[in-house]
Length: 412
Figure 1: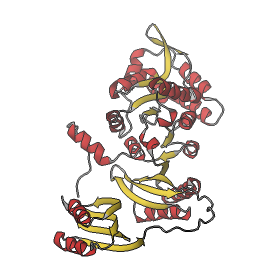
Figure 2: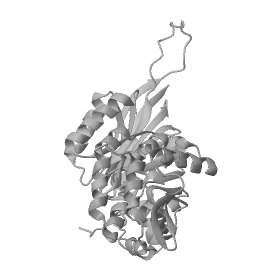
Figure 3: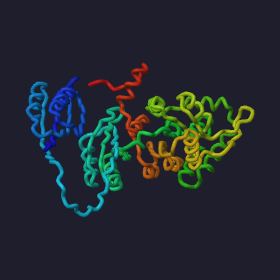
Figure 4: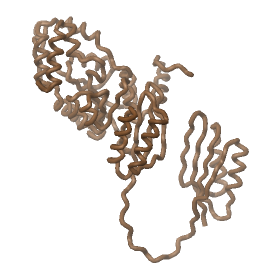
């Protein structure tokens, strides 16, 4: 006969504690069926499910271990097993629905008890069970990842979405498993995603036709013009502008906070990165070279004798073209679309977000937030790393190793 014992150890962490505990368990000839360990602010929490053979006295050893090491040891006998005896075979039970594993990411400028209570309640109300909570970041935003078991993520997603809207936090729900760790390509929108500007408006300001371009933009947003018609009408206003003026406009481009960290971290991890923009190559090519990304696609302004003609060369990069470019890059790299992520903010990103394995709406319009797999509404692009399961500590340690001067919050 075997006893099944759940052992829990808590106390101040230090090297050798886990080894000492496992030594006691091994000396008792017990089997370890499951184990999980986490350290929070140097406090160890270690749980071990042990199968103890008959005649072995492990509990006394565990209590002595706790006294010797200065930690608290709790244990619970959760069952006994005996060799199986022949029994009549009962009729087969109806198949139960498998409990899938889901990674639920919570993200906000602050995540306190109120937000965690709302998220946990939303999961429980959908029949889900939280198995683990991990802190991924405390700056520039707070982020927790929850490992959840649930038979159906549909009700859970709906509940979490309601909770996130009420309590103002972002939430992402992804199937936990190899597919989540196999992401290899990220496609990024540029205007209002990688950078804070809208380049056509920026060109209008520099070239003195900002009000006219803004009026066309307003008509497009009201549905009076489609993307291509609005783009061509605005570009026509730039006819005759000298290329040196365009180069001056590039000096006004401002990266979104966290953009360099986001790209640098993805490159370290071996990701391929593509900029897919409805803007212009004179901006995206410069960003590609500055940040070291792999691909850049955008609209090409027609130039004759050093001046813009007011026309475009080649196909327009609209919402359909963005999705097609994502598929083309993935195919060329030998990457399945399920292993891709797309990040964008506007309606012309919708097809790309839908085609990618994971579509992330970044500070997006409501129609885009509602359609995307998940949404990030904080103003830091590197917060998207946490949705991918990357820890802030790992980012910082890699930066420290390279001697990069990265802004970090004061201690205390």
